[in-house]
Length: 240
Image: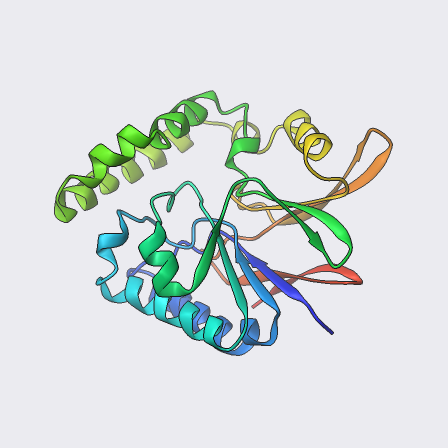
């Protein structure tokens, strides 16, 4: 049966070789059987710019996705909070189409909203302020003028600061705000939403304006890989 796969929050990095191997096997053997693969952000632990494509892991990931595209599988990439600097050079190298957040598609007859998920966490005010700064074109342009080594150092500092900030926040603050989820479904797409970011994989049901809507939260790949498989009969989460 024709089907489409969705993944998010893989956080691929050289210091996690096992998960990288799981990703390469997934692309070669599982995603190759699908019509399309949607990567809904945070494919990488961090991305400092497309001029870092010669880094071995980055180049290998782009090559694996390009090989998938060459086999006829459509590959789509939506930015996350760790890899929002992925640009056209990576897109071309990986044969992956960049899509906006949010994106709405007709998925085998079901209107489906795709997001990374961080914009749904509106109770985390500090993060939303940081996100607004990080997505500012001038901020990004200034960052990309720095040497690669300086960018890596800066990202390392930001990761440490982020880890410390998370320790001071409740789990509820870092999760999606139900009212924001319902507003997104109301504005963009009944009856299905697929997103990642929160690392809380589950299927939720929301009743919005009398519509029974499902919200699929994708799993992260810190401990093990996984994906959402959707076809005309519906969606199912699969762990690797």
